[in-house]
Image (cartoon, rainbow, N blue to C red; front, side, top):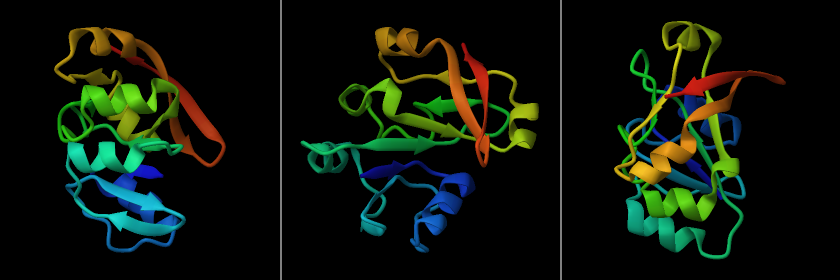
Length: 135
């Protein structure tokens, strides 16, 4: 299952997967190249993830740099722990990263926020990534 966060970058990912009705401001679930649930809440995500391999795809809020916690509260600490940091993909264009030199998390869980501090790989293009600091 792919859990796609809000924004135009994640919408472009959905379109590459053949899903053209992704919500712009919500979180959607895609499985087997089909939209399984649209504009989901935390409980719907938790139920869908049970026993399934999952990847969360998010993009930073432009110029603010938040990747988790603001704009995607559905991705709660419980959801994030269930999926694991290693299964969270951050995507951004090089231009967006030039305007957003550091990334931020504000999950409401101080320990989880601390776990995300350091550097995270951000996918910036086909076979291209950059390590970006999370503060």
